[in-house]
Amino acid sequence: MADVWIPPMMQKLTGGAKRLEVPGASVRQIVFNLGKNYPDILEHLYDPEDDRLRPEIAVVVDGEVSHLGLMEQVKADSEVHFVPAIAGG
Image (cartoon, rainbow, N blue to C red; front, side):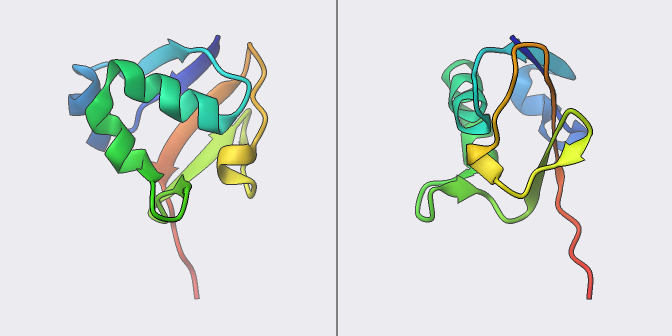
């Protein structure tokens, strides 16, 4: 199972958990499996209207910022971080 790190601003939605083991072979599966146990976190990560991660959230898989979003592949021993997205200009 992937090692999923929860950002401080969302830890209240996971009962204070900073990190969780979550099954899934893609970020999409990780997000929805996380949402099964913590339904409130789903609305903070997922935009159902556009079927993507919320624009204010970035995902980092194994130290690399993903540009594939929900389609990013995840290995069983991957480390996944959801972080506030930073926009530049």
